[in-house]
Image 1 (spheres, rainbow, N blue to C red):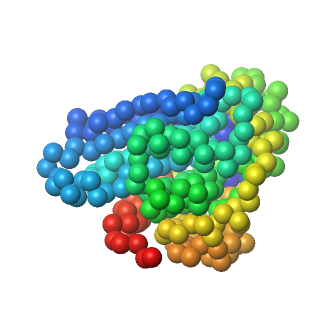
Image 2 (spheres, helix red, strand yellow):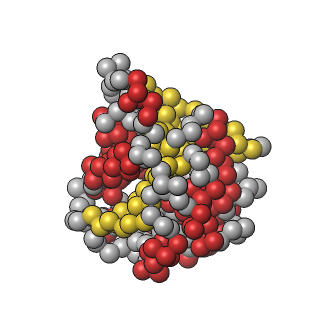
Length: 321
């Protein structure tokens, strides 16, 4: 996706509507967890019906924690969530500060390190002690940082097209801020919607998912709080990291997998980023998904679910000393 188009989309679509699981056998809870003053993270928890599951099998499975990207939230994870529930896994979808339906305060630390610390607070609040982390896009760098610090809780990590980065700020963020007056008008928002739809198609190898209804679901809910979105973007643009990702990667001792589509896109992890992961993460592998772009959660959700389950099964084996 072109950076400017991506950020225009982010301004309108950081939050997407909550996906309702239409299955009476699934327990769904939406919660807002306070992690600091004026900082509240939105969490949606899905638990499958385990009436017929053996207790040992249910308790040994990790919870899958999904961290959507800036244009995601729980709606964008609906196919992955559904696939994991069908396999008997509990899922927690967490929106980082300034993303999804989480709070968007103006005076906050939006660094990726601070975001990882907030996720830890949420996991503590939910009493989750055995998790597989899945981070999409920039949120993968939140997951990398979290896994490097919380080594007892995180048992595996999957990145959906997200390389290791030290800043959420991009040229697109800066352009969006410069053009914020334009975006904050009906004409500007209509322009952003068209650019978003076009960019999503360019972003994908299989564009069948880019229907009008899905585009509307990504975009509509956040238009009512455009100013809050801009506040969050300014915070992300200005944030600086206290720890460099290259210094944190060697502390990750669990399996790390990076999924990328075979269609080149502008925000695909770069060759140096993949080389950094290869050099500094002891158990790392990159897998390329055929006939896919960057939106693997939409284009190839089944493949993503297969990789998550494989990692979850691997965590049930004894860890090497």
